[in-house]
Structures are given as C-alpha cells and as structure tokens.
Image (tube, rainbow, N blue to C red; front, side):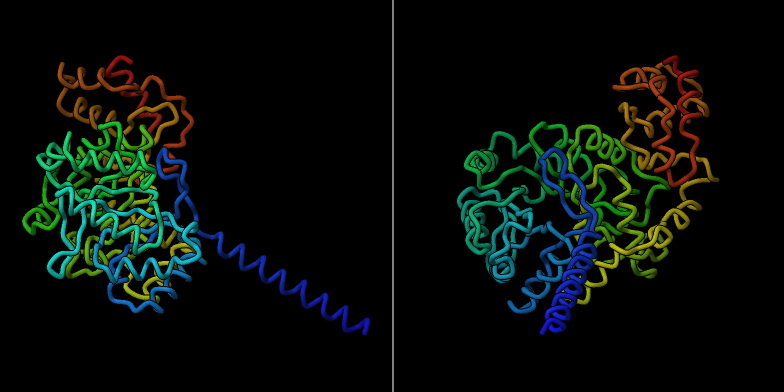
Length: 406
C-alpha cells in the first residue's frame, strides 16, 4: 500500500510538472499595452471574418485553441448574425478572457453587412452585437470606417457621435476607437484628443502609398513610393509619442496579397512572420489582427510565438529597394520612440534635405517647430538597436545639431 501511495504521489507530481510546462508554453505569447487604456493585448489577435463560415462547434474549437495559446483580443466588424452568434457561443463562460473590439455603425441589411450612420440603425446594430455576444459591454467601441476627411468632419457634432459618447458614459464601451484606411483621417483622429485606438491598414506595401491614395486602386498600388509615406511617418510618430494604440488590419496586404509573389504589389512574396514583424516593429502598434478562416490557419498563425529572429527578418528583402546602402535612413520610424521624445525619422529627413538641397528658411522653420531637437540626444542608443538599416543615429543627431543649431 505504501508503494502505491508513493507511486500515486509521483504520478501527481509528474502531472503537476506537465501542467506547469503547459502553462509556460501558453505564456509564450507576448503582450503589448493598448495605448493608454491600461489593457494588455496579445501581439497577434483574431479577425472575425471566418466565423461566418463555421458551425458553432468549429467556432468553439477555434476560440478554445486561441485562448489557450494566449490570444486575448478580437475585432468584430461583421454584423452578420451568424458571425456574432458563433463568437458569443464560443465565449460562453469565458468572456473575461477576451478583449473585444466591436464596431459601431454596422448592420446586417438585405442579406449583407453594411455601414450606417443612421442613429436608429446604429443603435439597433450595437444592441444586437451585445445581445449575440451575451455581454453588456465591450472594451473598445470602434467607429466603423471613416475613409475620407469629409466623412471625419461629418462625424463631428453628429447624433452618431453623441451616441458613441453616450455608450461610453453608460459603460457599454470602455474606450473609443475608429477604423480607417486613410492616413489623413487616422492622423486627424489621433489628434482629436478623444480617440484611444485606431484600427488602421498597415503593411509593407500600404506604407508606400501616397497620402490619400486608395489601397484598392490598382493604379495607386502600381505606383508605390520608394520609402514610407511622410504622412504615415507622422501618424506613427504621433501615436507613439501620445500613446495612442494602432490595431493593424490588412497585415498581409488584404486577401494575403503580400504572401503571393504574383499578387504582391512589391513583386515578391513575404512570409506571414515577416509581415507581422514589420508591423510590430512600430512601437505604436499594439496587435496585428489576422483573418482566420479555420483551425489550421489559426495554428499556422500561432507559429509566430516560436518564430526565430531570422524568420522574422524582413529587412533583407526591403534594403535593396529602400536604401542605397546600409546606413541610409529610409524614415521608416522603427527607431521610435526616443526616450526623450526626439522625432528621429523627421530630423533625419530634414537633415538629408538640408545636406542635398542646402539649409533653407523653410527647413529651419520646420526643424524649429519640432517638439524636441537633436541636441537633446543622450546617446542611449536604444534607437540603434531597433534600426533595420544600420543607421548611426547618434552621429546623425550630432550632425543635425551642427546644421540646425540645436
């Protein structure tokens, strides 16, 4: 009998050790702050589109694997009743384990998902979302798609926006966000003072679009810039310095275009790991929202947790296009945030212009207007470790101080 007890005790210890190992495995997921919200979110998260194609059992299985793997953020833009009901079913009894980014201004009408600003339709659509999810609140209330400055202006002082603020006051949403594919709109939203989260289309190709260009316009995609658009640099830098979270949509280029050499606007195929790493290199990014159609796709995406640095490295594929040689700054903004708030990419851009075109009063005025200047650099070199192009940033800052005087 004593031997039996010893054997039983040993078995329990082994099982406990196994559980501990499983727990450690589950914590392989890394988390980032969702801006100023106080929430910590998984680096990769769930897009809702695939839930329309699943039955409830498949939805439950997918959600279980996602939660057990550490994913804790989901975007729900789709108003399709099946999508919402499947997610609600899959979250029964574990609502507290998932942070929900739900969209306001989405309805299911005439058999399809639609955007609305009509206040009655908006209210009906949001109440349906809460009902089907089986919850009385969501963490992030996302104003659904504003893709032009005119649409942003129409939102101001509107019944729609009043309703959004009402939802926050009532505790039905904890934080306010907005989704957009337009850089100008996203920047205006960031500077509004009341948007906390921006769902924005970001990837290796879209970052090279000119400001205001439609990412679904083939002509625009065929005329990409050599480097990241300056307005996008401004957006990412502003969000970094003001702690506004970006949740990334279209990580793989929309429909996975960047993963297919024939469809890729850059003429080359990238891996999912390279696409994710590119977005997460920006400090303003909280999470990459991935479209997941089935359990196999989810498991493939979860490879991210165990990806080597070599697998994540996208710089070898872009250096040739974006930099003439190692050491050239492409203003990609991956060096941000600076510990003292220096807008490094912008200073490098102004410095390069002053070096090639001469220091003009306009360039000096732009430099003087920056919130922090190169002379404030402390040589901590945190930026150097994040630079994918081996730029000697401290040397650049010293040179900028010489040229611009501070």
